[in-house]
Length: 203
Image (cartoon, rainbow, N blue to C red):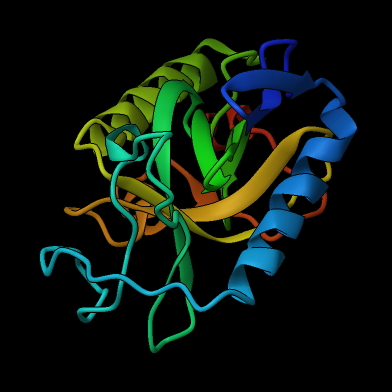
């Protein structure tokens, strides 16, 4: 799945917007922004309701950050894990969603996020059973992310242009990938060739 023309990097400068439409650069720019942000001494408190966070700082919702207030978006806790707030725009399938993320004040990015470590059935399937599974997986991911206050972390470039790979969490789900695995909507995936789901259905 490739990033469509709506994906962009938007740089805010003196109240004006300029866009860069180079899909193959997006993943690397995203990761580069994370790396640079990790060097900055940004700290903030986070809601204690985040599961698995142990009180470590996590970011607020992107929509809650005003452009005219120079607040940090990246949050770094004692565990050194960087978490970024992600405003989910749409769920594409059972393991991928599109989100708008502010790398730091004045720089935001809209990209597709592939969940790390899992593979869900494809909507463009070869059999009816896989299609049904794919619809169920997408619905499950929509339900998990609908809670809001989504954060992504462990972000890296994906093999497909314009997409990143990352873990995701919400206040109710510390590991979205693990939740999908536990519910049977996905299977472990660590790269390489992916097998079809139709063969599983025929067993």
